[in-house]
Image (cartoon, rainbow, N blue to C red; front, side, top):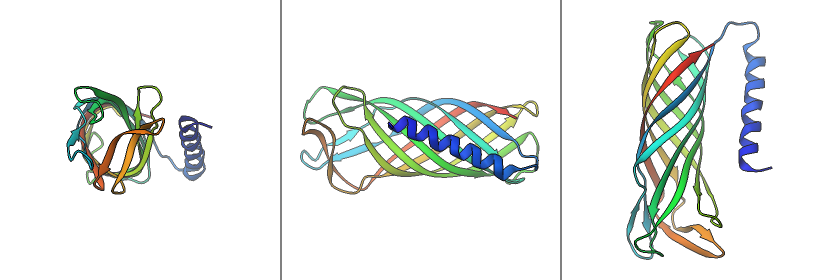
Length: 206
């Protein structure tokens, strides 16, 4: 079973568990497709001592949010960035890669207004660094995130989301990444890979 299939199975398991939890109590859920921009993300090459930066680029993704109570929601989140990074093994060239965040967490809103919902968000999960060039290994690492956002509902079922979220991915100190046939593009020094994204999306509430 590949990584995408495992993630799909986990999502379906969560949905079935939520259905049992909700029971006869009225709780709503939301589907939120979004797009935006992500910046930041640097690797410190332990051999060349160069700082390698991920290019700023667009993102897209999806979140599924379930009402937990009057102020909180549970959340499943997927967010993808397609970008490039300079590699010390090939000066002047860049390695293309997708950076995906697969997170589970929640949001808390302090507003009791039905249409205007500012909130804070917290989530944990995995970051997948996936080179798009053939032959390179993916890198899967633990990550966490904090965010601040706003939902504004034009109707009880349709709304607009605006959010900023920062991610921190644990890189576990020194080590080599983006390897192909025993040759690795980057030797990492440092423990934390950080990025920030701003996004907007449409909220469909059911």
